[in-house]
Every structure is written in C-alpha cells, then in structure tokens.
Length: 160
Image 1 (cartoon, rainbow, N blue to C red):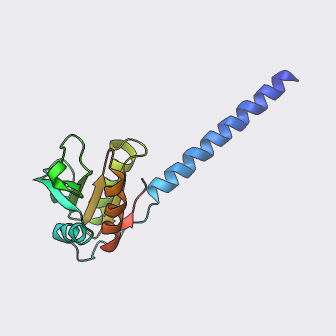
Image 2 (cartoon, rainbow, N blue to C red; image 1 turned 180 degrees about the horizontal axis):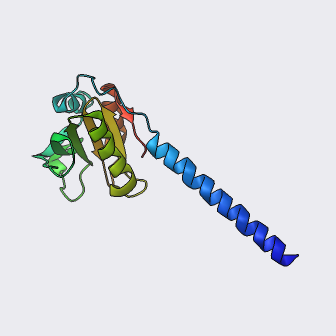
C-alpha cells in the first residue's frame, strides 16, 4: 500500500507541475499586445514621463542590430530628481525600442519576458511599434509614476 501511495503522490506532483507550466506559458505567450498601427513614437514616451514629473537623467541610443526588425531605440535612466542621480542605481532603467513589424516587436517582448529579465523585477509594455522594457531594481517613488506615464500613452502591459 505504501508503494501505491508514493506512486499516487508522485503522479499528483507531476500533474500539478505540468499544469503550472501550461498556465505560465499561456500567460507569457498570450499577453495582450497593442495595435501595431497606433501612431506613437519615442518622443511620446518622453513627453509622458515629463507630464508625470519624471526626468531623463541619462539617455543613449541602443543598437540592437541582431534583433530582427529593430529600427531604433533609446535607453533612459529616469528619476524624480536628477541632481542625485546614481548611474549604478537609477530611479528606473528603461529601454524603448521601435520595430518594423508586430511579429518583430512581439518576438522581442517574448524574448525579454522569458529569457532576458530576472523573474520579478522586469516589466514590459507594447505601444504601436514600440516595445518598452524596464529591468532590474527600481526606486518605488519612480516605479509607480513610471507605470502611470506608460499607461497615459495607451500601452498594453506584458507580464512582469
């Protein structure tokens, strides 16, 4: 009887693990994405930050030429006050990348959501041809305002 009990327990654990993996995959793969034809650009993102009281403390171009369909993008270190900006611990570090097709944008988001970011701290949104990624630790006062700023431009949230 002990052997049958152990087999039943192992079978139940295996079923739960498989169901958990299926649910996780459905959440990541089935995350809603915005309409690709929405007219939005990187300047819209910057204006949304400014309107919510966030400041770009550092900015640089990104060159993701190995990412299929990548057109252009910027990396932003943002904060509520740039006078105390620490490049090793920004308020938030945000990548905004423009892609030439919905497939390229969504593939980049899936890559970020399943492979690039650490579980938990990252966020990803889509907005028209833009993919917006936030990775790593964020200061709480910046995090909530950043979410409001991105929501104000009509994003669709990925998982994160």
